[in-house]
Image (cartoon, rainbow over all chains, first blue to last red; front, side):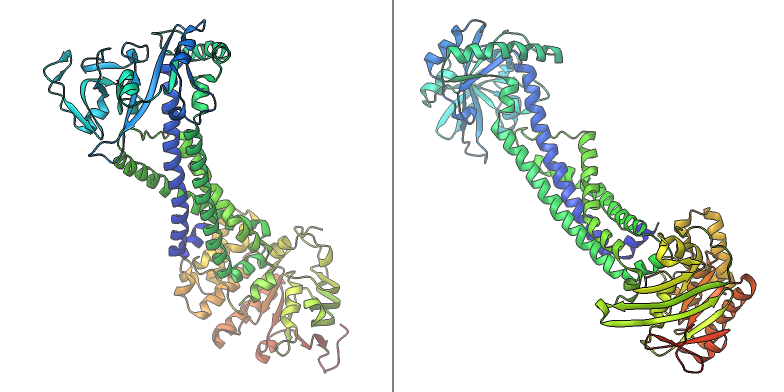
Length: 391
Length: 237
């Protein structure tokens, strides 16, 4: 009763303290919601790629900087246990009407990886295609691709043109994401590997070595089995092809530098926001304690112990923090929604589960209790006589 | 003794032997060897000029501070050996200050209840008692009012009710009538007298006002940190 009434006594001051906490919680919820979503997306990709090894140049900081020669590709294919291998390139091209570049994966038509993209309109890429692409459903929507010639069972007339900066191609098919819950896989396009090499002069970036072509890891046990087989095979590829490193999808994602950077960035921003909030709460509570010095002296005089005084001030901090958490969570959700409206391409999947809400409340309470600890300790340390004489 | 047990009945409510209190490492000598005693059930005034050490003495008796040296027994306990002074203050002492120190965002009843918070008494009993005391000090119609809605005299009477809510054996009042009109001051002193008569409560009142001192059983005069005999010499007791 007393802590709440004390806070309501200085409504504006309490409100600002609540807002400070809310900002930190909003930052926490929005940043972790997005990064957890990103991480979850990558791990769901793992379901598609559990029976594959991702082979890249040893020491390459990211797949884009990995280069694999045709000889190395053939050497990977020759390793015992590798049933098939899909060469893969990554290319980003500018679009005249879009601020973000358009992402393409380069694959050999008919390869194992290519077969995982289900064509829902038009036709798949053929070995003879050169300036032709298939694009994901999401990308087609974003680029406004005219679908009139792309019937569910094949092409009906001339395929639509796609004008990119420095390259014009035709969209011969629309594919669906291999995993429905991973929308960003349909936010890109696929070009023939031959075009990628010859038109753009780009090398193969990665090789997917397939242990069990055509097999999907639908259950957790399948994922585990695929990873186990992959871990057994990876050293053989490493030994057979010096300069390359074979990773299971799990290793590949764990080593994915960008994810680690995003995680670290999220942690840093959240810590900074929490620190600013702690300082703000400390300042607010300290002013409140100074204002109430005589009252604290009175409470001590009538028998309240130091511990009870400390608890009252800490309870005020806890109330502020819970209110800040209650306000910050919806603000964070609003921020995520606003961001998803700005960012296109399905890249921003938000993953908010009970653990994030619980963590947000925990962070809020931590901010409140830590921020009010020094003022509470100071209040508790007041001598009754000094407090009663305080001017 | 931890201060939570009632002291055995004895003759003296307060016994001070050579009580000294220094501040700032001895630069300020607030009390310079005070001897006196107060019997249970007495109503005693402590008078003296400003800065003479009256309030310091009251704070020491009230276990709000500890003496620099000397021996001070309150309700039969040597305060130097009482570990939990908070409990002693909360259970057996009552304070009335010159300023009421009511918490502005609490009603009069809630203010009166503050000393009972650490005692874990049943809520209904506490509320009933607070209402009774407010009735007794003439504030039965103001129980749920905030202090800001009350006059200065009413606030001071509420502060008196707060001091009495734990049935203190020793009531310590520092200029209780200093900030109220004469009628309110007289009502407060009437209440103190009736407490002494009805319950045997010991009352120590600090005052500048000779009329207030005249209402007490006897007066102790303190000057420059020393207690004077009534006739002007320095008191040994």
